[in-house]
Length: 282
Image (cartoon, rainbow, N blue to C red):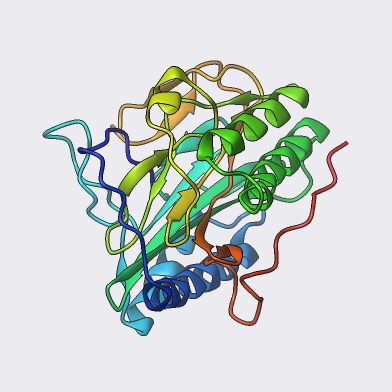
C-alpha cells in the first residue's frame, strides 16, 4: 500500500529493539504471502487469497494495515480488503474478487500488518501458470530492481544514489519505472517519512536523505512494459497503466543497521542480514 501524498517530513529512526519488533511483523507478512502462492494458479481467486491472509493475521493477533485504509479521494470508500491484488496491467491497489485467474496472468499481491505495535509491508508479483517471455522478463527485472536497491544500500550514502541505480537498470532492460507512486518510511505507522522513489527527480534531490542506522524503508519498485503513465479506475482504488500493458511490483521492508541493510520481511528462519543475489535477467 502506497502513500500518495506526504505529510510534513519527519524521519523517525528506530532502535535495535524496535527493528527486532518490526522483524516479527515482517516474518508474519512473509508467511502470509507464502500462504497465497498455492492459490496463484489457473482457477484460483484473489478473494480466496484475501481470506487466507485475513485468517493468518487474525490467528496471530495482528491488525491488517490495508483493511479500511482511507481513500486519498475524499468521500470515496475505504479499502475493503486485507491484501491488494493487481492483475496484469493493474499496477497497485487492486481489490480482490471472485474472478478465476487464468493461465498467463501475472498478479501482484501486496499486504501488511501491525504486530505488537509495529508494522511490516511486502509485495510480490506471481506468474499464473506459464507466462509469455515479456511477462517473465518483467517479473525478473522488477524483482532484481528491488534486490539491487537492497544491495546498494550497503555501499551508498544517500537514497538518491540507490534510486539512480534502480532507474538506470530498469531503463537498460527496455522497461519503465512507474513514477506516480513510491515507497515510504514505515514503523509504528504504515506510512512514515521519508518518501522512497525508485527514480531520480528534482524533488528527490531537494528531499534526499542519508542511509543511516535506524532508518526503516518500505522499498517497492513498480515497473511497466510500456508507458509509465497510469490512471485510477472507477472503483477509486485500482491503478492501471494507461496503455493497459503489464506492470509488476515487488516490495520489502528494509532496516539500515551499523552492519548494513537487514530485510525484515523475509520468512522465519531466513537470515535477515543476507543480501539478495542478482536475479537472472535475459
